[in-house]
Figure 1 (tube, rainbow, N blue to C red):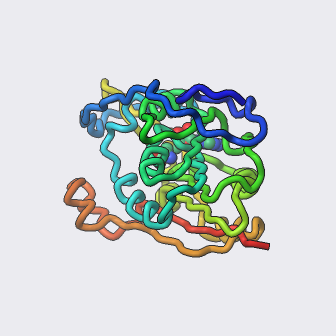
Figure 2: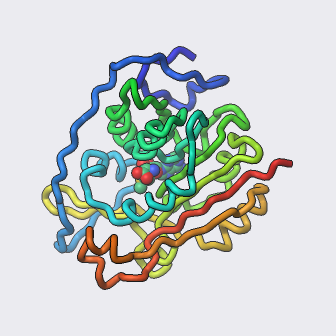
Length: 269
Ligand SMILES: C[S@@+](CC[C@H](N)C(=O)[O-])C[C@H]1O[C@@H](n2cnc3c(N)ncnc32)[C@H](O)[C@@H]1O
């Protein structure tokens, strides 16, 4: 398939093996200003589904200070380790946070996401020095070749998917045997205790909520067994002094896990 550097491809157009785009400086980098929108306590939130929610959030997603991302990223990057020269698939890549971080570490990165607005923000981060490919679609419908990737990463995405079995089937199929899958998500403590949404605010203070679903550890355990994945590590990063220094309003949540990060490996046989 012919590709233009920085072009976003529909997964339905995907055929055969993936090629890296040729070196080009066609994609400009957008400089994002750090405007703090801050939580607004006015009542009356609006519920949005995944695609309309992330299409709307995309414009401010990278600017909103996000303690979950700050905490999750520490562990996820440690689990991902050295990716130089590896083919990495970023499931639910959003605005390309990990596409950028991993491309800068020398990985050959492919991102997929159903929100065209999130992908558009990812696309603008492409430079000749940090290249990645972007695909528009869902994890469940992707048709990359089997056993194609050395690492599959999914950051803060699986909580939006109520039924994980088809998602795991799709992700494990494209992962090479013996390779790792790293998953991060909001800790199930939150949806189980009633905070079953992720929220954002627009400039007027209007709150929007996108649903999240709890995936308990027993579910990950059963899925790992079903898809012949070995559980190598699990971490539950908690609100700590370092995070409170940056987000003082979290003082009352000290010790509470915000995220869960799993390191799984596809069995060799
Ligand atoms: C919280 S954002 C995380 C984005 C990015 N991974 C990060 O950590 O910054 C969740 C992303 O998951 C995407 N998503 C939700 N359901 C998905 C699915 N079934 N397949 C692929 N991506 C999905 C959304 O469109 C959104 O961009």
